Length: 130
Figure 1 (cartoon, one colour):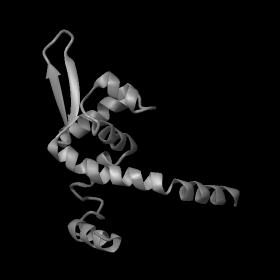
Figure 2 (cartoon, rainbow, N blue to C red):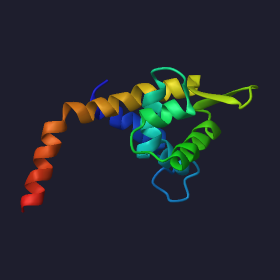
Figure 3 (cartoon, helix red, strand yellow):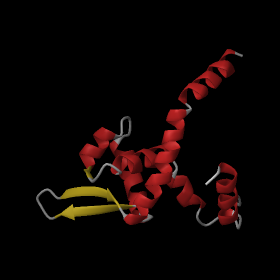
């Protein structure tokens, strides 16, 4: 699908009220596209993680922020939280089917940053110089 076509499809799908501050699903979009949720979903593409392992995988995130983002992703049906009845309980997080369907476009976005890294840094340098 070409970029103009993708943009047209996105605009048709979002045309009803996405740009309206009262849009019902804008809070979901905001949560899912924040830096931490994006990295959490990308990390979970590699398979299930226990909380501590996921905390170690997503560098720089606090335990509190990881917990908040995981709760939101579970609430929106993107991440599954599986609790094993052990002492202490063992909690594992994994992507749901809906989460997997989001992971593809999300990793494409992350790939875009990787492909355009030099251009982005060059633009940043030009801006900062002057």
